[in-house]
Length: 236
Ligand SMILES: C[S@@+](CC[C@H](N)C(=O)[O-])C[C@H]1O[C@@H](n2cnc3c(N)ncnc32)[C@H](O)[C@@H]1O
Image (cartoon, rainbow, N blue to C red; front, side, top):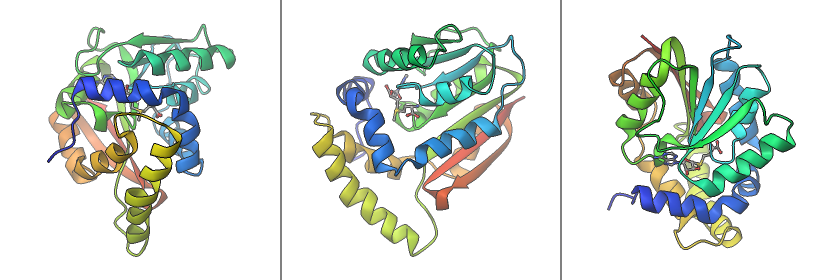
């Protein structure tokens, strides 16, 4: 049976694990998630100071903060889970970026922004959770300026054996146990993680979905042997 990605389930799940989300992210990835976000920012730098940047499914705002550190442009983080957004807002204040950054509660499938608003639109580990992937991609493309960049950072399954075998063993057997034990929740959040990654389109398949959403020159870069992959497209 396909994994339940209904909006109600996904929002409740992230609301339940919000408090331990950052700690577990860094623990379960061995801190490498920080490097993946850094690579993302390097691939889609904000070049204009007056045009905003959107980070979708921003959660606790780690990618939004990484973007803010490399530009003076306004950064908007959007997410439909207010528990995650509250943490993001607090982190922006702590980082002294409260003026530059704002956080908005919004569904990625129906963004409250006019078309051609942002110079860069990003999403990290978020698109996989959006109920309708294609609608999420179309919205990202719609709100991006012509010539602007759309970046998707997402988990993928490594293709290189024997690393693939070891990684899948860790991802399917060890990670869900640690995650569930440390982030108590009723939504099986850390069982959902490998299931949703397994079902999500990856590599060339996601490139084709981005092209179908109206993006051109789409390319992908596997990171850390393909544990995560960065996809970048340009609004035509
Ligand atoms: C795994 S977290 C990623 C958070 C952050 N981007 C990061 O890199 O750590 C996924 C986030 O996507 C959000 N999300 C999922 N579906 C969404 C939707 N349809 N609209 C807005 N946010 C959504 C969740 O609330 C959650 O905060």
